[in-house]
Image 1 (cartoon, protein in one colour):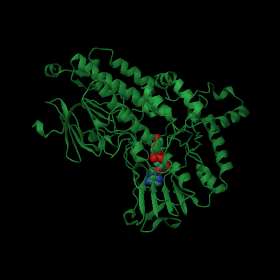
Image 2 (spheres, protein in one colour):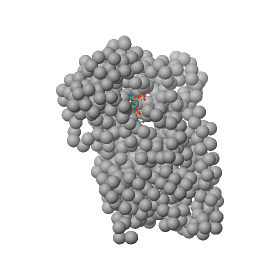
Image 3 (cartoon, protein in one colour):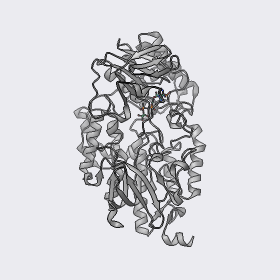
Image 4 (cartoon, helix red, strand yellow):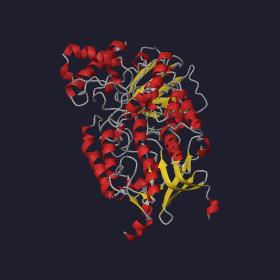
Length: 544
Ligand code: NA7
């Protein structure tokens, strides 16, 4: 009966991270009754959970943040080009209050099932605390990098110290003072953590499975002049970041040249300039052919390898830190200050898992084939079950009880990276095939704007259901499969292929067509009155 229902809304948003907050705000602004359920005890999503020392953006703060409201944009003064987690979490809370959304968000509520009710044409959701929710539309903003990936480490349960994951960091501050620490993993998280603690600990060992092409973040404080410039150029910045013609979703100006436009000597000078550029500019302002011309990528890699050799004092450590098996960009590169420099400190050691694999953990530490090391803290910086992780663990059942986790056993199939055939009125912005390898929030904003527009259109035109047709989904997936091989990410090495999670199916999980293809295929769908059959009414369904 109705009285057992705790929430009955038009739009139920799952997750209060960067994407969920925006989805909620847009739904409320469009006049829907809307509610958010968030598993964490606070808002922020990724920026709530990843609170390890020195966790920070490696996209420019104002380029990653919201750009749909001038008041919000100019009402917040980022302290640094690349902000740290506490500032980001404060900003997201500021945004929630700015838009007066707090009353719409229930924290500490983890969704454990979402089941489509055909007769009632709505979703029925339950949370771990036993709440029952009815919703016309569900927007699952549960994040691409939200389910921590743990290696199968024998004996870990006997470890008597603290075992932590960067992506599920405790709220009580972790005391590294004088501690013996292991960091497992050297992706962006492990690489950020090492320099943050190396001067505090007794010693820290970084366990590296695959070396990465880490380059300096080149972070700077945002000066008063820059603050003024940002405020005064809001419209221009928002237009540039928001443009479908901007594939990266950054403000960076492309170099405007191919490698062949420069002589070998000029290329070295150019690479030096790239090395000194901020964050992702190493990719976005590099030669146009960096990612398509193997020779030139190898030349850049050799330039980077020489940088590592010039920074790291111990030649053997330097060689171990240099990737030998993949090009720059084939894995998502970390951009970190003082990563290589950390290995010059007496407290830091690099342990190569290729040379000396872990045998087991025990009460006092970790044993590798080279011997035993004592630890007080083991940090897993081992990444996430990318793309599908959260969606397949939420008990989602669509038409005819179709279980999403079963349906996606061989990898996800979807339309536009946010919806799926046989999952009516269910959107998952930022899901598999959602991000295009550029600035994540910009891709998600494109998706949410379209989703919100579709819900409004349906309301105005008497439709009560959106579900991409099999044909529309196949066309999207054909695009993904055709263009995936052209992407720079490596099937062997990249978590964008699921390569980091043991036993996970290898399937490309980004949108290789980028914003251009996304907008093109969405426009194709909206070119007919009923979105090519994706929108329907009860009458349509009964007579079909
Ligand atoms: P990433 O980038 O997925 O990196 C995870 C790291 O952990 C990477 O070095 C992995 O090595 C390593 N890893 C994973 N599993 C194991 C096992 N079983 N044993 C040893 N080492 C392992 O995650 P991050 O948290 O650093 O970054 C996530 C996102 O944050 C990133 O994409 C950006 O969006 C920012 P591998 O390379 O797989 O050999």
